[in-house]
Structure formats: C-alpha cells, structure tokens
Image 1: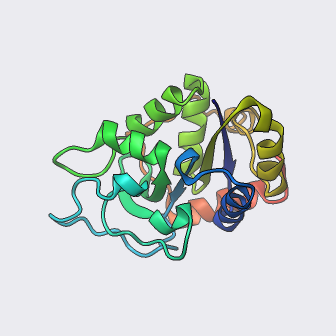
Image 2 (image 1 turned 30 degrees about the vertical axis):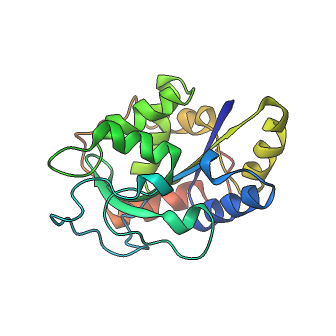
Length: 205
C-alpha cells in the first residue's frame, strides 16, 4: 500500500475530494481527513469529562461528539483540540493512529501523534512537519492508502480539487523563514488563517 496525502486550503474542496474518492470505490478504512476548526465551521469544541479521551475509533472518528452527517467517511467526523494547532475535526485511519498515540488524561491528541502517524503511514519526517503546519495554518489534509495500481487515479482526483503536496507547500513556507512544525507555537487566529488562505488562493503551491 502507498499513502498519498495532500493539503487543501479550502475544506469544501477537501470534502469533495473525499466524496469523489469514495465514489471511485476507495474504502472508508483507507481514507482519512484532519482539518483545522479554528474558524468554528463545525461548531465549538468544549472539553468535558465525557470527551476527554478518544471515542468512536472503531468507526474512524475521534474525541468528543460525532459531528458528521450522512454516509461515508465524513459521517464519522469528530472534534478535539491539539496543542500548537488548536481545534480540529478528523476521521479515519490517520486520525485514529494519531489519537491513539497522543490521548492522555488531559484529553486531545498530542501534535506529535499526527507527525508520528504520517511517518508511520510512509511519509518522511519533513513531509509530516509540513502537513501538520498546514493544518495549523487553517488547512485540511486528506490521506489515502492505495495499491500501486491506483496511485495515478487518486493523485488526479486530489489535484483536481486543488490539493497540494508537501514539496510545493514546504518551499512556500520556507520562503517565509519557517523550518519545522512547533507544537509550542500559538495556534493561528481566525484573522491569520484568513490571510493564509488568501495568500495561496488560486496557486498550486
């Protein structure tokens, strides 16, 4: 199996990419999405005693209430907060791996859990840092596990919906002096995320 991950600046484009992948027969068990919820698009995360550990991992969701609707992977979307990134929504194998590595008494997933899950899935450490930084900056990552014979097909679906790879976005980040994801850095504000999305609008980087 090969893991293909792309970063989307617009959640709705990531969402459509997931639906197109499902329509082409990619199993839910081989799909994953992790998205910033700093703009509270999916509601507000409020930690309680009931959601301080991951729930619903059997169906691919993570921490707190299940907020997805309908069918498919996105029906299992769950909400939690991550140090250095802030609130996110997530579902699927990558999310389950990350949360399993990072859930503790304080609740939520350690940022290292996402990086570790990406590395475990076949990405380099550098790629894992770039994708984690992308989520911190308001983005969404979609990860797909496929056989070699379907790589081109999956890459085309992700490209069609403006998913960018780690090499392209990493170059852009480094131009601003960035070097690696820092879980101790403050999460981006709504205003910073809006500016970040505008910076890359219409650009394939």
